[in-house]
Amino acid sequence: MRNAIQCLMGLGLACSCVMALAGPLSLEFAGSDDTNLNPSVNGGSLALGAMVAGAQDGHSFADGISLSKQFTLKLVDALGEASYALVTVTQTNDTEGCTVKINGHVLQPHVPVTVDANHPMNTPVSHLIEVQVPRNVDAGNFLSSLEWTVETDVIP
Amino acid sequence: MNFNKLAVVVGTCITLATSAAHAATSSGTLTVTGTIESSISLTIESAGGTTSGTGTAAATAALGNISKYGSAPTGFTLARGASDWTISSTVGVKVEKANLTSTDYTLTAQLGSAPASGVTWKLNGSTLSDSTATTLTSTGTYASTGSYSWDVVIADSAAAAALDNAINFTATSN
Image (cartoon, rainbow over all chains, first blue to last red; front, top):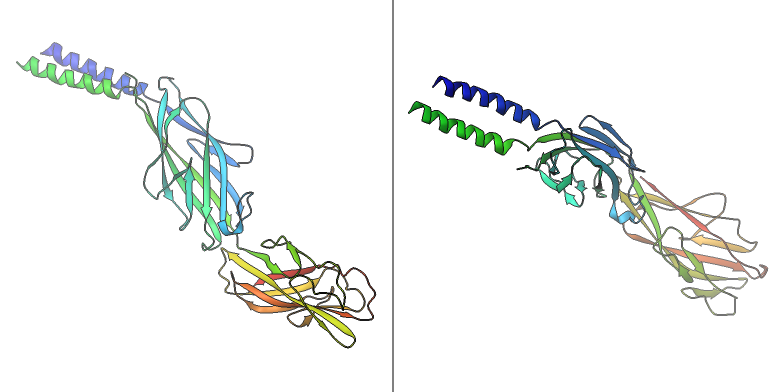
């Protein structure tokens, strides 16, 4: 009995060690050629600047404001054990009437949307964000807060 | 007996530890900001003559060779007076808005250069000049093509020469 309890305690310690091995996992955002993205720890801010209807190549005035920007996301698994991760994005703050897409997936307020089911680890992967502002949305500040959640695969 | 129960508990603990061992989650926030700016768009939808670029903000109307006793240019009518003659048509102008609460707009027109001597350009009955903008409407309706009468009056005394000119339209939201 005593031995069993000691054994359990030992396993508890082992469990703690195993759980610690799961991290750290971090997200590194970066802009591309024409994307002004200021990265921060596990996040960043993407400044789109002045947004005017029909101003972007390939879009007419009738389209309203339609912007797309490329950026990269690198998932860093410090221990190098995971191969892929599931990436979901939740829009936690939005500008009413506007649409934000990641890789073609329309984001929903407070609903996680899978934007990459097999995101490779430890290498920058390009992603596309699209912002659409209809012509009937009033002028003013545009804000969209996107919470990115990643979950690595399970290695047997 | 007690030891066996503990063994079961231990076994469960191992199983849980194994299944959760290498899956990790993390999250981050990307904040996207910008400024939505108001804008309006002006397009020339139609005009007399042989046109190109209609539906854009830079249209061209070619009238070809015209004379008092010849035929009217395409899309025009020709009226002969005692000492002058007039070719008449219309110009269609559409103004649209985006991200703007304005309910109507003011539209003006101005010639790009001084007209040739003896030649008068008119829109909506008002004579145009190259120095002052002429107001065509101060209550224009967005997204609707406004049609404005367009007349070019040519005195019989005017020298035979090219009439070339530009009409610059300016829309301002009210």
